[in-house]
Length: 107
Image (cartoon, rainbow, N blue to C red):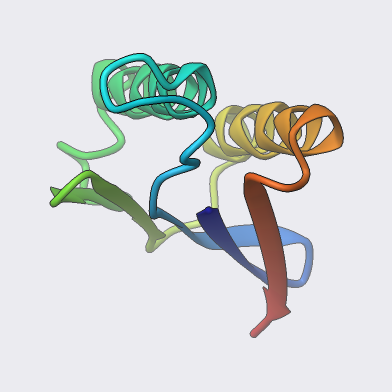
């Protein structure tokens, strides 16, 4: 199962962690994992292109197939980008709820 942790502070996303595997299909042919990975990678690339990493407004780490995004400064544009990731993951969960679990925490 893919486990997603989303932390908020007064409606601002401060942390997103995506870990695990969907086990929807055999390794290399798992469409749920591929979809989640594509969405998350696209969002991470967008954060980098918009220079949020360079400005040290957020950090991204990839380790063993897991993705972690930590937000250090509030920025409306960055929040829209992160909300796009959350909404996309929620849409995936609607169709594949047995393969994706999203947990929300308020800081």
